[in-house]
Amino acid sequence: MGIGEVGELLRRITVHVRNANPRQQSAGSGVIWDSAGTIVTNAHVLGEGRDAEGTHLVELWDGSSFPTEIHSRDDQRDLAKLKLPATGVPSASLRTAPVKPGELAIAVGNPLGFTGALTTGVVHAVGPFSGFGRRPWVQAAIRLAPGNSGGPLADAAGSVIGINTILASGGIALAVPTATVEEFLKNGPRPRLGVTMRIVRLERRRSVGLLIMSIEPGSPAEQASLLIGDILIGTLGSRFTTAADLANAIDDAIDDAIDDAIGDAVIGKADGRLKIHFLRGDNAREREVVISLTGRLTREAA
Image 1 (cartoon, helix red, strand yellow):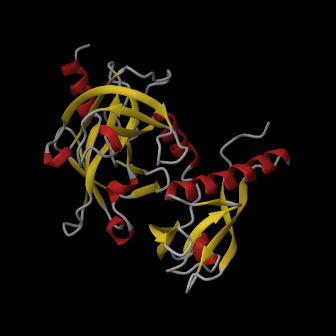
Image 2: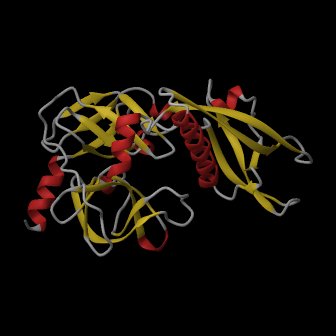
Image 3: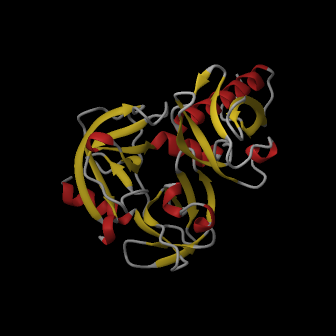
C-alpha cells in the first residue's frame, strides 16, 4: 500500500475537534478509535477549566459534524474520550506488534487550519523522554504543528501506533502509545492531585518548586487543605524539579496501593497515600501533608 492510500485511510479515521462555544479557541484533532464511535484525543485539545466545559463539535472526513460531550479525561496522560452519536463509522486499525526505531511514521491532523494534512517521518525511539517523566512515548522525528495534537501517528501499513501529543526538544514529536490509550479506555483516568502548577525558583534554597495556581473543588488537594500559593517541593526525600516528578510520585503511590490490595485479594478501590513536603507563606518552614489518592485497580489479582 502506498503513502497516498495510507493517507486516505488515516484521513477517514481522523476528526477535527472544536469547542462548540465560538468564544473558546480550543481545537485540534482526534481519532475514531472503534466502530461504536469512540473518539480519542488529547485532553489539552479540549481546553482547561471553564474552557473545557460544554459541548464539543467533531467534524468527520466527509464534512459532517456532530455535537459530543466529554465522557472521560486524564490530564496526567493527556488523553480524553468523546463519543459520537453515530455508529458504523470507519475506525482505526491498531498496531499490536512492538514499534521499533527506524520505522516509517505517518501523521495526519488539522494543523494551522489545514484539514487532513499528512506528514511523514521516522520513529526515533519508544520509551521515556528526558524531562517528561517515566511514562513511555513513541518518539518520532516528524514535523508537526498546532492542530496535529490528538491525531493519529501510524506505521507504513496505516495501523495507529500512538496519539500525537507534543513537540519536544530536538525536533522530536511525542505520541501517547496505543497501549496506554487502550488502558485509559478500559480503566479510566489515573488519580491526580487536582491542581494547576508552574515551576518557580526558590532563591533562598537554591532549588525549584511547584507553585499551586489553582485547586479543583473536591479534589485530593483541596481535601488535604492545600492552598493556592503553596509550593510543593518534594516527597520521601526526593525533590521536585518538574511537574513530571510529581506525576511519578502519584503513580508510585497508586501502584503501591494496588500491589497491597492485590496481595490482600481485594478488588475494587485502591487508596494510595502520598506524603508531600511543601512551603507556605514566607517559605521559612518546610511543612508536610498526607494526601489520599483513590483509583480503580488496573491489574487483576493473581
